[in-house]
Image (cartoon, rainbow, N blue to C red; front, side):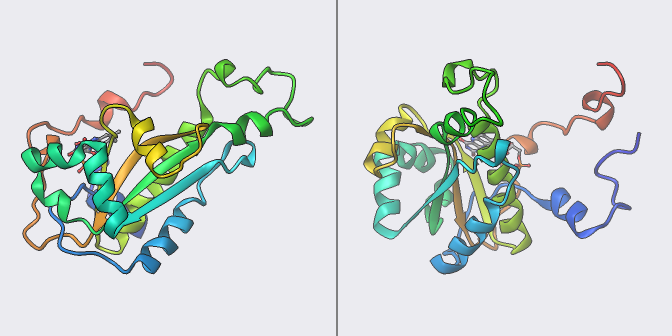
Length: 207
Ligand SMILES: Cc1cc2nc3c(=O)[nH]c(=O)nc-3n(C[C@H](O)[C@H](O)[C@H](O)COP(=O)(O)O)c2cc1C
């Protein structure tokens, strides 16, 4: 099987997927209106039952300062990757389980017990939000801006409460956004770990 890094595959989407990588040094960032526009576009991801329970919370300026402090990520990135703190925004990617339990209690979906969130083997509010996150990463790469997806450290509820996010909503990740610093280099685990070959992870017919 051809490796997915085959440079002969060159549609715009294929090359975008190949070149996307995390940025850990930023230098300013886009106007909030431009970021808002692509966040809205990113939410046009598949959505189970068209529940549309994915949301984004865009944090800039004072809200961003507050986020860095209360999330504990200021301390973390100061020691690990201080250039991340120069991002102009952080976008929290959120999924609202209530939108799904409500949708799956409607007549065309009822009968599977999914009005109870504990009965979901796969919580689709997290699945859908993760797809929106990837959309946003690709849209940012397409604009040649930079992004870093990271998880919330510790108790994410503390952060979400601070920004009035309802209790039914959870966060699948935070995306730092800004212009990629000209000196930003590939960093993190891909610089010390090889990409697994397609033959190890793409299974035909059986594992
Ligand atoms: C769920 C998730 C959590 C991550 N958390 C962090 C993080 O805390 N800090 C960080 O520097 N990168 C984080 N990353 C980025 C990964 O390290 C990165 O995606 C991976 O090494 C592959 O690199 P690439 O995205 O540049 O191809 C996270 C990625 C994902 C999907």
